Length: 275
Length: 206
Ligand SMILES: C[S@@+](CC[C@H](N)C(=O)[O-])C[C@H]1O[C@@H](n2cnc3c(N)ncnc32)[C@H](O)[C@@H]1O
Image 1 (cartoon, chains in turn brown, orange):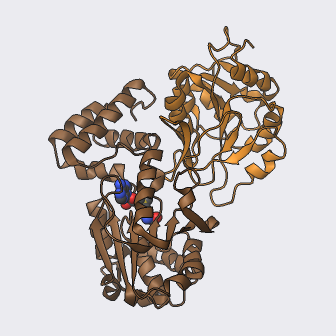
Image 2: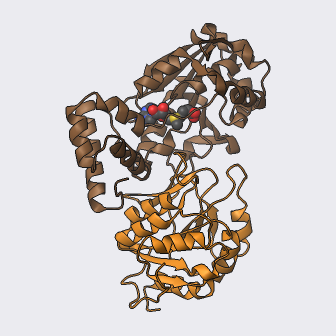
Image 3: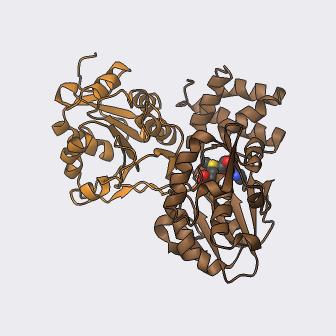
């Protein structure tokens, strides 16, 4: 793998991010450089480039390279009911409040291949709320969004999904929500009619709706402090008064200037409520 | 394997942070080392110990009662404070980021490296980029080769390096691998490390 511990690498990394922004309008300049470093070194390896400058040359002149590079730059790891206790926290502390609204909007920011959005749809159906809900599920990776929209997951993942679902305080069986076809589990179309998948970047786009619940998990961890501030600013703006914010297991508001705008609801599960 | 040696000269300036990596036998080694650090120890200490992936880490509980320095489990975007010990949390890589507000910790759930997450190489390489010559790197007892490349990254960026003398390590593989990967500034048994670490912090002679 190429040597990342050099001054030249730092320079080339910044130049590459600038080039991607100018050419493709994807803004990675505010990402945590520490983890971008490793992923870009792997990408350079994959493309047989000895330096990031070579990679920059190629990605500028061979647009077909960009989608592949995007998969290195964005981490697509997800599960249904990932961290089940988060979803239990939602059921116990958030759902009762959501019942008081006549209609609901939910934003899943950084939905990746859709698992989190589908999980929330299932949870809201179980809690009798889905019929009044519209879920916006957004991401910057078009390939991930396509899979998210398809809602088809490999059969060998279903066992762990089922276990997560049970641990989340399930009221029904996960198998009620998918049918097995073509070696995959195809999630229910009646859930799908409550989810809108779309392209939205927390780095460059602005708020598009007022929501009662905003779930952005395992996304801020890839941002630097300034970009995290921007994203949390969008969240504060998008959430209604007393709206709920959920973050990933290793994310928190602790080191943000937005901490004061929220009260912790279930601190261990990173559930907050806007003041 | 190169013969253990003492350095000819002390490090040029003092370090702002020390990264430390260890696996098998590591908790015991740290029980000897960390309590010796004085309350006015200046560098931040960032530590990766390989531990079982899905158990909650007890490192903070174990060491906060034994140390004169504050001990934390590293959190994402936490500003790095001098004289503070940070342990990588289970199942995440620990990295260093630097921006206009200074250095901060970063966590990542990227793939394991050397079958480990947290991986020592990942911490050392990112800290080397973030701190340059104001970094010390330490490899203690361990049963695999994680950290060897990272320690060389610390060295290449001008930092100072220390490896536990393999014959004194409960598991010599990790120190041996670190020594085999390239030149190292200090090779010492645990008992002699506190003085060196203190000198790194003060920028004084050893
Ligand atoms: C690790 S996945 C998280 C998936 C899901 N939220 C979960 O927790 O399982 C991170 C996602 O964030 C997306 N992402 C990265 N940068 C983004 C940005 N600027 N705006 C929106 N999404 C982004 C990536 O494309 C990726 O799909």
